[in-house]
Structures are given as structure tokens and as C-alpha cells.
Length: 232
Image (cartoon, rainbow, N blue to C red; front, side, top):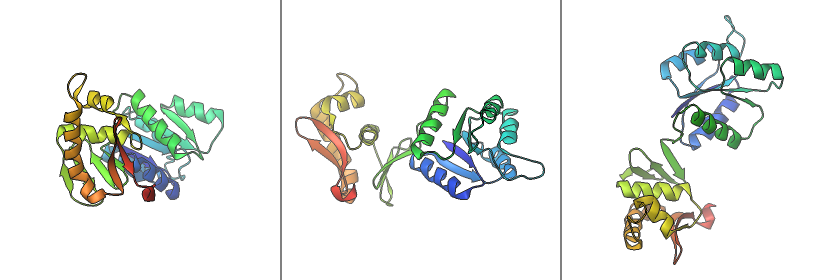
């Protein structure tokens, strides 16, 4: 999932870039209107996060103009980002085809939530290419896991599904039954099958991670992905 961030404030653009990359999105940047349109055509991003107040140039290409031009050619989701609070500006942006409108300053979590909501509304998948927890990175589509900066290790489909589920609920113990139903479906697995699957997955990730990240077993309850106290 690729997002084009357009803002002349490079510090803010880098902050948005960092925030989205942590969530597994691929991010590209532009810092003026002309480069924004060029990168949009070259990269064909899945979404734009577009600052309204871009530097004036000839021809003038502020966020409103860019939004209008893109809407004349495509339905790429657009979130406008601005310090303006006037209702007329908000209405204008939405009338030009923007999908959402965020006022500066904002919290990174708010931005991520808005991005995911717009992607859902516009029918685009919100599943990132990868997910991280501590020094562990899971590449969902490739069924690969990377520990620290080491080589990627291939996972079976069941190992991939298990690790993704544990990472989604990292820090929490999931019951045996919940995990079994998620991996194999109702009636499709048992605790011994799960125990063997966890053992194989541990063999691929824990030798390098332990004790910083590990699969925790709470006897009689279930499993969870945890971090040591020194890493919290």
C-alpha cells in the first residue's frame, strides 16, 4: 500500500512518513505542487495526504488545485492536511473531491485511524505489506519473518497465520480455543497440533530474539507474544 505525502514542511512530512511506515505502508514524498503531480503520475499511489498551503508558484498549485486536477483524472483517495479552520475551506476541499480533512496539529494515531478509515470507505485493502513487533518483522504476503536485520526466514502457511495472529494481539494471552479456531477453524485442530505448531515457530524466531521477544505460554490458558521488561 503506497501513500504519497505532499507537504512543504519537511519536518512534518518526515513525521507523517515515519508514522505510516511503522504501520507497514510504503511512503513517498513531494514538497511542492509540480513535484506532487509528477510523483502521482509516476508512482500511482493508493492515497494522497495533501497539504493545502503549498508554496505559491507559477502556475499556482496549492492543495486545492492539485486535488481538483487529480479528481479530473482518477478517484485516488485524498486527505487534505492544513492549519486552516475556516468552514469555507473545509467545504471547498470536500466539494473538490477530498475524502477527508485533518487540521494541524494532530496526533499520529489520529492520522493512522483516518487513513485506514478512508481506505476502507473507498474499497481499498488496509492490510500493510508487513507488521513489526520489537525486532521482529513479518512479511504477510511472502510468508517470511525477519529477526533484527538478519535474513528473512520462510514460514509455512500455518506458521505465518499463527505469527500474524499473535502479533495482532501482542502483549495479550490468547486462549487455546481462540487460536485453534483462527488457525484451523472450528473443529479443525486441537491443543497438541497447536503445541507442535508453536514449537516449530519458536525454533525459527526465538534463538535470535530471546529473551527480548518470545512466545509466552500461560499453562491452562493459552499463548501470547511478549517482550521482556527491559524492552518495554
